[in-house]
Image (cartoon, rainbow, N blue to C red; front, side, top):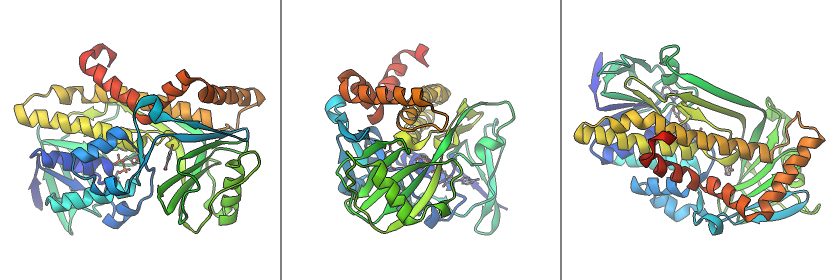
Length: 406
Ligand code: APR
Ligand code: PHB
């Protein structure tokens, strides 16, 4: 049996686990990362690609933003299309904050390279992680490392292993409460080798369903269609995907969409989940392991980064001067931010998607909300503050001084 000792054992090498490991490393705190999948798989997994300004700043702070600063596309507004019309929400003019388009798998690549350069131990293809002694001072992980049975003992375990991970499932029954909501539709997403049709994102609300035009670079477009919840990909040959995108994103019946070879495609379920608290004993959960949102507002990665920022600060305080206060507050403060993100993701989901159960009345209500967003500066500002992440930053700052809000 191989025995390893570290300060923080990190389960999962998605954005949460890698960023946590890297931030801790820069503060002199040792960690070991164990990941179920192969490195190539993790680096190629296509997910959302909208980074809030605060997420970009955190990546800069971690020293992993060189490629992002060169290749990320900074945005100051988006387009909203409905009823054949075209409108712009100038979120930077309304809030002062920008967003940045940069693929999550690129963030993951940058983080893995940075961990490698720093000599941080990471193990990929470890598919038998089990966690033990969670409520003792020496929690441990068992697994197979390079063909050999191993035990990794730490002061803490960080569960960064996503929604289907092992950490949350290993906690004692009744030690947390789960909140869940499942939407009756999904998103079919494609990555296409074609220049984006516009400089800004286009959110298109159509009676046939929602469509989104997004991008990853000046030569790669990312597009999404609202589809049924269990939609087989086989029902969507390329021509049907493009025809549906053209129709749903048309302005005054005019279609204008650049089309090109489809590089990858997938269906994303629309679901919300939160566990409370995000901690048990010496196990702290972060990112998708603790909460997920539907992709509508692209908050998943940004909420994960917010958890990691806080968890890294809390571990740093613990190791620097033995104060447990931040670790004790991690779940409470984190959950306030998480619920803020849940609420906005739910608002944006119901604003943009016709629901299968909607009647004519609900359709008119949606139309009224959309009109309000593009005619009322107050409504647009409130929306924009949540969209860019300013509301969450403000909440975090207020929580630090007014604990009753937590
Ligand atoms: N053992 C080790 N690793 C595991 C295990 C396990 N039993 N189960 C899952 N993992 C790994 C997954 O393979 C994945 O690489 O944990 C990682 C979790 O990564 P993500 O799912 O990307 O979650 P997170 O890092 O929290 O990032 C959140 O991902 O889903 C998006 O929208 C979400 O953008 C957000 C981001
Ligand atoms: C994306 O590019 O993946 C994306 C962008 C904006 C969203 C959702 C997803 O609101």
